[in-house]
Length: 350
Length: 249
Picture (cartoon, rainbow over the protein chains, first blue to last red):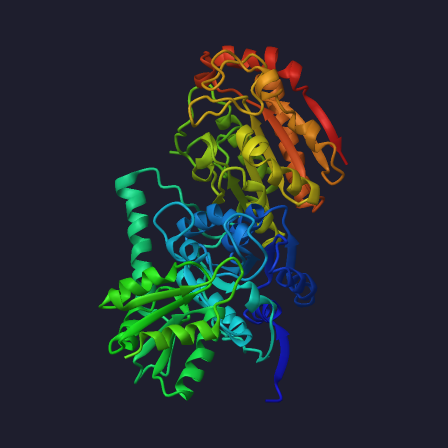
């Protein structure tokens, strides 16, 4: 345990990005993720990297686009309204098949909302907030340790598939301090023959999403992307099943709300009620098969979110009997309560 | 049989791809593309060059330049160029932008890249209209000029006066070179090449941000013949957009 240190979620994420080889960060201030740019501004010069405060979220994501096109490992972070501004850039990044890591430390919305943690951006994250037929990989950490571990994983996944990997945290997770063991670099190296480095001894490279001819060109790109997304769906679903084997009731959650659910599971188990937790680690691809398995023999499924019901749609699409899917959520920066979860599970009764 | 050896005195630049462009007759883009390619050849930096394309008629510039190329979304070329140049400080990065791109949707990115003194070169094509979308009002459309979205002419009381890009950027401390040129005749075309050359030279020497505005023609959307369009630049645009150097540090 001697290698454990105490860090804030946002700072652990920043350090993990540096461990993963990220040497370029572009961002714009917005609460509750300000520790990320501040950490990168302090740390990146130490490791020969570049931190740049952009003039807007839009500029920041386009700097990410340029740095990624140049072949670098690059990251930006923001919170909900800022992530909305980045959607145009994320669509272009998908079309040009560029790898990058984007962090959304969610806050309450819609609009300016507030600065408290929320999970209101699930639809935007998993359905694609930008234009066109595209997907992005979405990782949902629940602890400071996972903020770090999944960040290291995110850079490898981004390079492997040439996609955006979105780390979907929330304001509570960004702000809490917990003990963690810093992850090690994976050492994986990805060739980037497509990168813009100057056409020395090779044909010019082009990074672009424009495909003017529908039949021979744009549909072809869409089909290439589709194959890639199918491969991600087949290989990268991640989840955790906690005490689900004998469960009569199942809680489904991710991130901060899954921590509250875990507490409810432990307390209910002490009372002899067989309840388990299915926790997403990837929101896209959605771990439907694992959820089906965990939910198969349960009588009732309670989806718990810090929103008024977004992930529940994926849960309903995944399980055989969608009638047994129930919902409990709080929004606007409020947290679901352990007692309320317990009350609802008990009310399902016998 | 021995062939007589001729010396090439004028050839297609290596930095230009040998293909027919999609530009209309009398359009200025082809001229500026060629000037840029000649400059790249003259400095011998083709293999280090990266062109950042705008959204607009010249969106396909990366198909005409025989070096690496990068698309940018509308107005974001300066941010994309910033990302590229920060990763590869020894590459030669050129952001090529039109008037809608640079002075309407992308004004923020243009001003802030210039203000940071990013070490890349901007070529700004001002033809006073949106070409690709069919001739709508640009931020640089002249007073009373008729466009698809100003059918009775641009009324400054309603939509403001045309914006002067060089003068706007000249209020900033960081840029090292700001010049407005034109391609409406041979003499000015040569001056344009000289300015582009200075802009690339500054970048090679790591001196910082250079901005070259080129007054250009759009005969199709202006509803003019090519020569009339060149004359319109001289008679209507030049008096409002004075040619010359604003800064050469």
